[in-house]
Length: 419
Image (tube, rainbow, N blue to C red; front, side):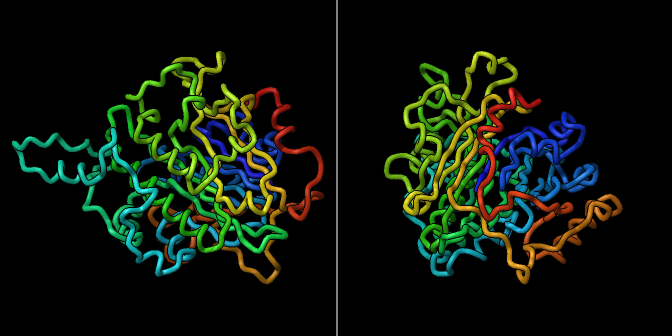
């Protein structure tokens, strides 16, 4: 099973470079089994302007920002028939895959709870925001673009954490969760495709990001404990270790390099963490391997970048010897990020003929003929899972039941630059 993740910084712009041909894009990327995209910047209304909602032979699952056009958004494109369940909602994914006793268990102290900004806890932010005018407490963090990032009282259970924060995260279209079967494994695999928040240069979204980090880590840990293989993947918007950025002395004041953000990443995939950094399994000491370069400062030609994109794996994948390779594809252009890849040794199991697809299939013509508000209403009332868009299927000589041909990693590396 070949999985690729890429922050594309705008789906329409990327497709325009390929004459709006989704299939051509997928072919040049080596036709992975799953392509996880972040920062698609697509609203439901914007999806109606695409010539196709998925490449031939693929199913597409979109999460869109509901409050702002051209912002955030993720999409998971998977081989037709390979998705067993899909959600664009933290709450729905948690309800489907998390035991009730785990949801209601005390979450404090939790090993992956956020440590806060500059080493301070979320409680300190709560205290500052509750302080009366004129007190010695510092000012609260600025509100987000949506006007509601103030920190509520700290939740005490995972269910309360979901109730408090999940609606805010879901409204920004930051996650798509998909479930897949693996041939030869008793465990299904959950792919958590995420566009993690950026705290902003002034730290205006600190609480929002720390809450997001804590929630996805807690859920993924619970799912791994419940018997799933779990992969958290995407743009984490944080540099893990000094080797992951070009700075000799990383500036701690910059978003993505703050010590508190990096400490959380260490708690997730560092020594003693609950997950594993897939790239570092195969390249433990390799330096100057980055996934993002500042366009404003023209840093890509000199390879002065940061590694912000990751696959965080549950240890069960390694224990079952299912992890074959993970790499970075810096020669693939088209965004300020480059793709990253994860190859599993087991092929993906396709849905049986009597298994239902994970969602109903609204057509492109429906999107083009219905108002955005009506579309949202239709999808919410008729689909138990996600905004799911399918395009036509095509027969394949190399279906998911077994590998064939050159690896997609090698094929993508040979592109000489995708534009």
